Length: 214
Ligand code: DX5
Ligand code: ZN
Image (cartoon, rainbow, N blue to C red):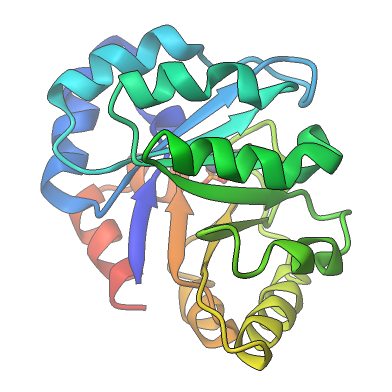
């Protein structure tokens, strides 16, 4: 399993230490950008991504919880971001065009859905997007409880990707911990996003390793 810890749960007064921890123990670095409109919270903006990029030694995995995500693709490419995931709820009929724009800028493209969006709505993008992000909480806040129905949603998407003989990573985000990571792997997830279960752990390095070994 790939582990992409979310810096939303890091100590913002000592973000450098948080990034250095992820340089040692993570596979990717998950960056949650929120606009207060698509989701009922504001985390941090794009001005954080450039300084993070200067010290990050792992691929930056950006999760855009914003309306009009396409406004930011060029800037993210300039910051050296590897993965750009935007919400289907924000992009609607522009989803395919957004995937193309992200690819044209040399980045990998992900499409995210909240728990109330039917998984079938991702099917048209199988074979187009590099990654699908299944939210296992409603996007907007760290530290929420994992929604168990997400396991069925991941399995449904995994079997459709297989049925079509395509590839595509499945990332899961929200309430991920050592308590559910094995079930997530069995359901077909490839990438685990974890905020509080990594940064609030007594031993964050061990927490990341446990998720990876799921
Ligand atoms: C929530 C964010 C998540 C969040 C995960 O909207 O997308 O990445 O930080 O935090 P935990 O792991 O604490 O649920
Ligand atoms: Zn996220």
